[in-house]
Length: 356
Image (cartoon, rainbow, N blue to C red; front, side):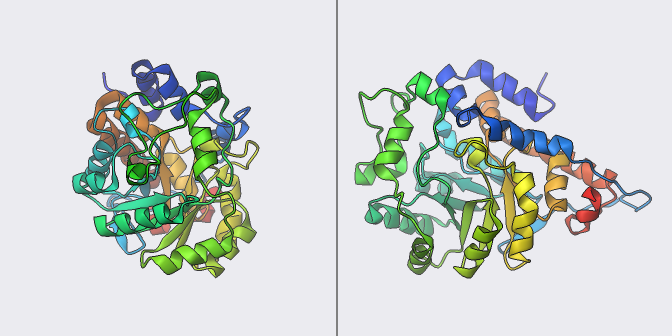
């Protein structure tokens, strides 16, 4: 029997993945306080549903940066999809297109940008880390533009790499045959060899620029015509600064609990960011979304859409493209059901009154 919810997909994926791969995907930083908090915060938030609202006809679609998607769930950027299935990021891109939503592909993909966008049947965005080598960084931007990506997502919560103890314990490195494919042209595709601990952490320390400031956002905006969305914002002051420095949107994110352990759950940070932005740019949120009711709660708190990461990987590991598509379709069906039971006919009718 196929899994009937996202938790069952994780259970199925765990049995199929190599231990090191599962631990990498599933793990968080240090004591995993934030990893757990992201999920638990949704469970604490009740929905004050409305009744007698004529919900016979419903529209789950939403517009985001000029793109209409079938429901307010996007595919979050996650690394190394080919550890989950042979077709990796290409399978993810096809699944997102079938579900009518946006895939955000990662800098740390195991498939090059051009192959992913060629496989995609829907819109793609590109998540960007800024490397110490600005030439390599600009090459990624130019390739994303040329390949047809419609936005850049700049990750800003990785000044230094979080300590993910499962990766340290496993001496995590990529399996033979897999690399950080997008950086091969600059000889930055492989992890350091012969080191104890996490190979990815060593790679990030060697390659990524820890000196970034708001001036670097301005620099990036000056290099591209694509909208730049900031991912990793939890503080209202940073949300205001993002708008002031020209960000086209912000993603409330604690990197899935993988960076600063004891960061707030994203649902706890979301209302303050929404208030700070004051409707000037869309606010998105990730972290801990596992049910359609979670999507309703996030939208009620002011998010325009949510992003899901790990569940897509569980779908890929379970059944490749079809598994990832099924994960998205399960969320869509649950969201539609929750929306109806809350008395909302459109996404626009989901408001703060549902969470009091």
